[in-house]
Structures are given as C-alpha cells and as structure tokens.
Image 1: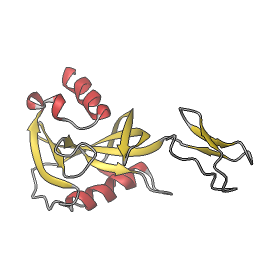
Image 2: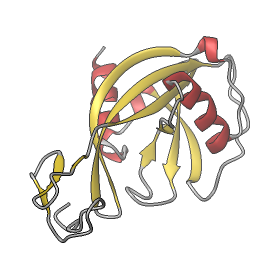
Image 3: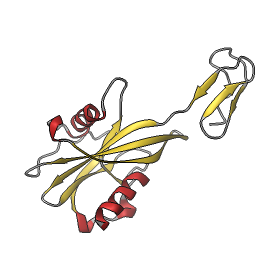
Image 4: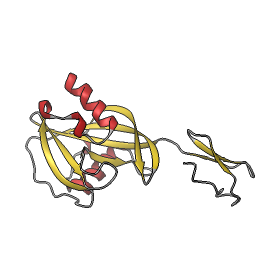
Length: 170
C-alpha cells in the first residue's frame, strides 16, 4: 500500500498511507479511502454434499473455493450470487431460493494489494447434482464433498474456513 505515492488530484508525490485504511495528500488535503469491499460466497448443497470449485488462478491457485465474487456497483448481494453462479458454473438460479447464512470479514490479496472484504454467505439447495460447465480461466474443477469429508486446510480463504469450521461443529 505504501507504493502509492502520487496524489491523483494534484499529481505531487505527497500521498501518505496511514497503515490501515486511507491515503492523504500532504500537499492538497486529498483523502483516498481503501474501504471494505462486499463479496458473496454460495454454498450449493445437495443431499448433504456441498459443491466446491478448485481455483485456477491466484490468489490461492489450486485450493478449494465456493462459487462467488465481488459485488458490482448498484448490484444487490443476491444479484451477485445469480451473476457469479452463471459466470463461473453456467447455471441459472432462482434468486428467491437463495438463503442468507452469515457474513464474515476476510482479506483478499490481489497483485500484492490486500483488499479487506465482507464475505456474505448464501446457501442454494438443489434437488440433484447437475453437470457443470466450468469457466476454466477461473476454475480447474468442481467437486461435491460431504460435510464430514471437508478438509479445512484445503479451503482457500480464511472466511470460508471459519464458516465451514462453525458449520461442521453444528
């Protein structure tokens, strides 16, 4: 974060990072906040099994993940779930069947920049497993895992590990 030095308003090399949330310009008093980003993660469940994807890009390439992603401007969390499930798995979901489960803080590092996120967890139950058309640029495989077979250390992100740790514990 300290690498950002030039003020986008006045152009001087005068930005100072406070070490936590904002940059401020000592020349023109400009302030730039690094606010929390909203993201969703969808727990797709079918008869006691859960659909995980395996990441095919950094961060955490090769680790298990849930379908989901960042909320776009003027988009609800539920709309994000619908969009991300279609983009990543090519499945169309009924927005009314999404069930909010929890919200947990997380840090998502992308190109050496840590983004603080609030990950919103939703459940989407299906009656039967379905064929998945993967977005291979993002996902290398999709796997159904029973609750008792989930290995927390294989899960990519802290928020998802905490979520499943609590979920498994009951």
